Image 1 (cartoon, rainbow, N blue to C red):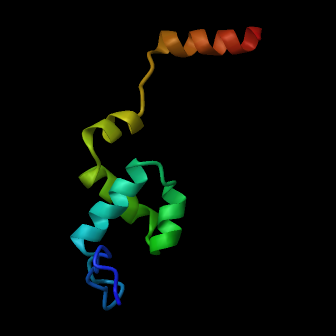
Image 2 (cartoon, helix red, strand yellow):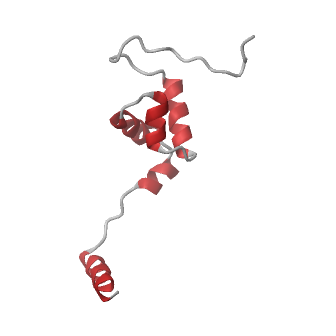
Length: 87
């Protein structure tokens, strides 16, 4: 007897077909909850670029803000380098 809570996603017929939107959203949610990206690509057989694009397109605003690269001013960079040089 099958588990009624188990979700069934449309399978891909070949490499060029698209993933089921529900599966994409599930994977994005798992990564946001702490699953490492490398592990997600291994489990689901994804390419790194696919997962990166999904995270960019479907990721929550909180997650987007968390991964955003911070830009530093030249003064901040010089201060950091000076601090490192001085130990």
